[in-house]
Image 1: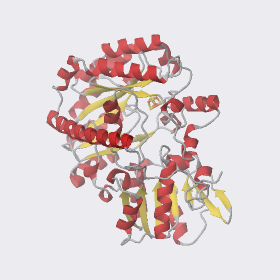
Image 2: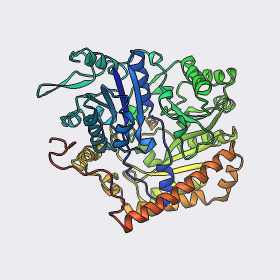
Image 3: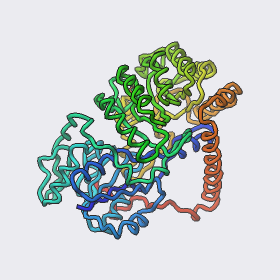
Amino acid sequence: MRVLLVRPPLFQVNFSLGIFPLGLYSQFMTRYPPLGMMYLASLLRRDGHEVAFIDAESENLESESVIARMRPFAPELLVGNLNVYNSYRNIIDMITIKNAFDAPLIVRGHFPSAYADETMSHPEIDYALTGKGFTSLAQLVRRIATGREPNDVGGVRFRRQNQVIDTGPEAPLADMDDLPFPARDLVDNRLYTTNLTYRRPFTTMFASLGCPFDCAYCQDRVVPFTTRSAPNVLAEIEECVQRYGIREITFLDPTFTIKRQWVLDICRGIVERRLDISYTIRTRPDLLDDEMLAQLAASGCVRISIGIETGDPELMTKLLRKITSDQIKRAIELIRRHRIMAFGYFMVGIPGESHRSWQNTLDFVRELPLDFAQFLLTIPTLHSKIWEYNTKLLDKDIWREIHYGRYPTPDEFRCRETELTLPEIDRWTNRLYRTFYLDSARWRSWLRMKFLTGYVRRQFEIAGTIVTQTILRFIRQRFPTFLLLRYPFARNGGPGSPRR
Ligand code: SF4
């Protein structure tokens, strides 16, 4: 079959607080490749289908442009991605594309996985994948191609007359090495970047999935921890370098360094194969040691991101982090000793936060020898413990609300049970940013950065984008009808209107 996969256009929701350009900087300047969709494209090709892919989000395309570009391909089947932030608009775009091609529509992504009933409430959606699709999609497409019902394919919702049939959970993938490498040839790898990318082309990769820890604000805890084999990971890195000329990789693994020997094998393999690559990882401070950091640095690791979240020991315990301030400090010093950049994530507006805990965080930020830091409003991420708690407290699920076209304000989105109001959180966030980034020691540390020129070049690009975005925002505020939102809000009975 001719299958078209689409990452629909983006409607950006800004949850950032603090100094505006910094919020913009961190949130609008990162364009990751659609890794999950690229895996699905490879799986379908392995099954003999002809596959096309459009990343409308990164290419900034309207659904009409997607339709115009794909007319010659004339897809017989559509697969669209729905994310939780944009589900409503994603669905409208996918329905517009479906209507143009008159082809069955499968949707997948975080939204249908969590809210399959809401997804199927749109009569135009024919099938929803309730898992990742690694084992279900190819089987489903085989059934569609042969005109059979997918009633025995786990992880699918489909229609039988007026009924929606649930086939139960998706069968687990027996071995992650069975997955083909993502179809990077179907996208323009030059499109992707982050605000801190030094070298391009850039891509992302998963060497493992899930996390065995149980932090209260995190959704990765619900995915069982599994790794690919080190040779399999190395083969994909090699393909990235040799076939696509990729020079920088961000590993999206939530906690890259859980299996020490596995990490060392990957590092050794990169060095032995002489792969000219820089990469960044995320991990916990208690999962790093001197030897591992030496190997990471030698194999091209340029930045390690660590979730610090707060400088208040009491809040750290509440968040179930199971790490101490001393462990964090030691890990950051060790990272920097190996000339790897250290990036710290902090959360603002944590449940239970008070003026005293803020002061503790501010003092801690001053003490830490980090190179970069980000202070993000705590939002109740889907499937996190905070989300479960918040949903009960508010008696409504904010992610489901988005599906009905109602975008919560940051104040609705923030976690309850903090003595700080949103304006106070905003003021504190500004103060944290100022304290961190106006410190001259920080600027001196940047000068020792590897690939400094690439980094500086990227910052100039970003400055240009920020100026453009700020002008556009000003125009929108002054002349609200000049650049209207591209999407209509839900109208009862209109295309894409969910049935409640
Ligand atoms: S925050 Fe990090 S360590 Fe904690 S559960 Fe999530 S991925 Fe694991």
